[in-house]
Length: 249
Image 1 (tube, one colour):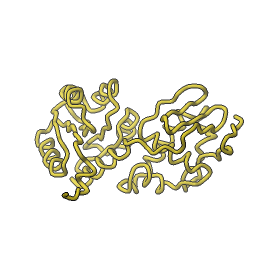
Image 2: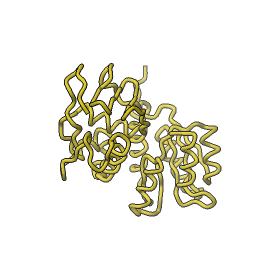
Image 3: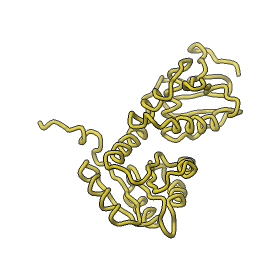
Image 4: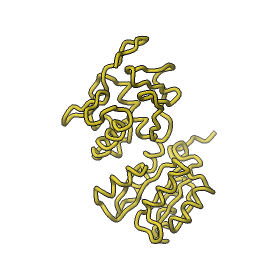
């Protein structure tokens, strides 16, 4: 029996939708992804991208921002009405505001043009890994206190009686924090475990997604009681009560 290569094991049957109004860019990305074993479909604008996404059900979308008629931001907003497919933005602009806007809209990553083929493929693999379910921490509810309950088996987070919807990256970040409750996790550790080693210099991702999590689970995000900061070092989730005991709020 033939041995499986690393490529075979990491991208079996994965379909990538590449959206760019420059045909040469679509052809360039398609050629390189095809060599890595991905199945690639292309689109030249936002309208075609939405049609292709509905028909092809891709595993990931590579989406250019600067496009006529409907830019990448609007395309993503419409896509998110029906799909949570991972999206990587491509942009000729490196402005921090654009990066944050893209992530706020639900993008999973943001790559500035020009980029290397190696970087794009590495980021695609990393995002695909992040969207896989995190392993369960236990078979029962984790009762942090009277206002927050988590069940990793069921992928449920209940804050103040309401089920909270988390994006895959937010969920994996919370998983790392809660399963290491009471321990300081550095920026480097969180980047490696949640995003991948490819992101070791992207501290802003940790800060941004910590903000997202706090907005969803904290009663007062500006004065958090669950996700605590260790200035200049990293973050720590509050100590959990002993198993079988419910903490007071």
